[in-house]
Image (cartoon, rainbow, N blue to C red; front, side):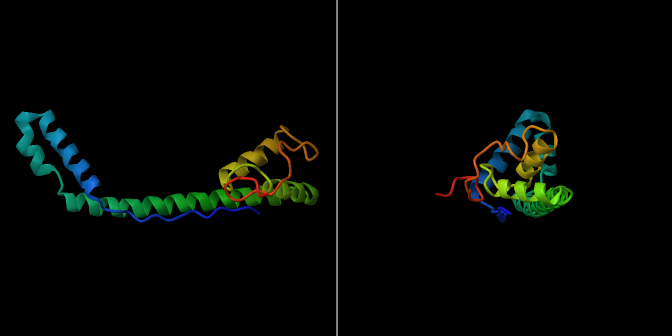
Length: 138
């Protein structure tokens, strides 16, 4: 079955992100000039913010990967609930689908079949093999 790996991207602390943070904090201070000193005292340092963002980035990436894994499990459970003939035809169709190899697309494809938008005999696309991005393989 077609599957596209989820790429991991580490958080990168760049000078552009730090400059954007400085501009943001400056705008916050300028928004209330009478309280600029108090606002400046309550604002975290650049290093603290970047360290916090790195932790949040890793946690969000973990949540995204877990959500994606749950969607794959849900899609596989829906496929396994079908009859053997339906399962074989739909798995072959998914391998040739012009959609990215993503669980959301697979679930939508299975939902379209279950509500009758197409049948096993009238698939919405030609059965030509595709790569994980949904591009036709010649």
